[in-house]
Length: 306
Image 1: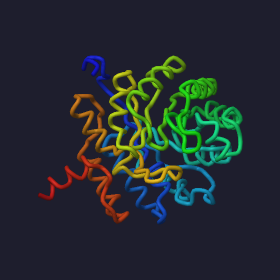
Image 2 (image 1 turned 180 degrees about the vertical axis):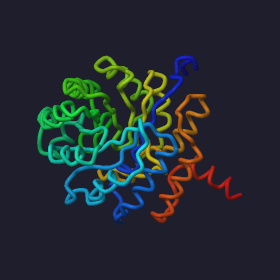
Image 3 (image 1 turned 45 degrees about the horizontal axis):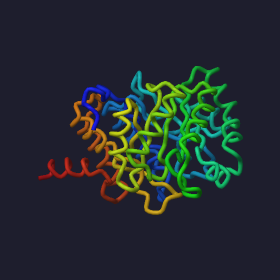
Image 4 (image 1 turned 135 degrees about the vertical axis):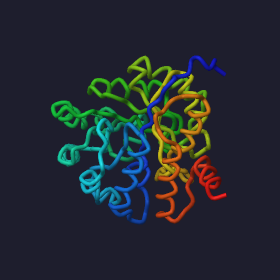
C-alpha cells in the first residue's frame, strides 16, 4: 500500500446518475423527477452534474426530456451541468439548452467500435471533430470519455497502448477532461495502475478522471488504485443507478454514497454533503420501486430510521 501522503487531499466527484444512471431504465422517468433529482444533487454540493443527453429519442427514449430538464433545473453558479452530444445535431440542442459542458466518446476497443457504430476507432473520433470545434468556438467545456478502457465484451482484454492511443487522439481535439472508463466493470486495481500510469504520460494528470462500474465489485478498490497514481477526478452515480447493456449482470456505476464514504474515511475533501446525497439516492430509489444499490447509502438511511 502506498504511503498516505501520496494520496490527493481533495477530489472532484462528477455525478452521472441523471444521465448515465437513468438512461437504461425501461420505465419512463418523468422530467419532474429528473429535475428534482438534479436539484437535490446541486444542493448536495456537486461541482459537476451530468444532467442529460442529446441523442436521438429513437435510440435512448429515456433522454427525450433533456431539453426540459436543462430548462427547468435550479442552476447554481459555478456548477457545471453536462450533456452527452454524439453529433452536431446533439451539440446544437445542448447549446440551445445552455449546457456548460458537452461530452463526446470513443472506444479503446476496435471490436467494440466496429460492432456498435460500424467504424474504426480513428473514424469514430474524427466524427467528433466538428463537435469539438463548435464547443471551443462557443466557449463550452469539452469532455471526452474513453469507453472499454479495461475490457471489452467482444475482444476481452484491451491493450494499454490502445487506451493511450485514443487518449492522444482526444487530446488533439483540445478536450478539457478525459474520462478513462471501465464500461463493463471488469477492471482490477493492478490493471488500473498500469493503465492510468500510461495515460498520464499522454494527458495532464489533473484532467484525467476515473469512471468505474461495479459489475465485479472492484470499483472502490479501483478508485483507490487511481488515488495512489494521483488521479483526483471520479465519476459516480447516486444510489448506484445505471447498468451496461453489453455486460450481463452489470450492476451499474459505482454508487456515489460509497465513494463519498471512502473519501470521508481517507480524510480526502470533496465539498459534498453525504447525508444530502443519501437522501437523493433514497428519493430516486423510492420512485424506481427498488432498493438503492449503495451499501453506505442504505446503511446510513437505516440508521436514520432506527
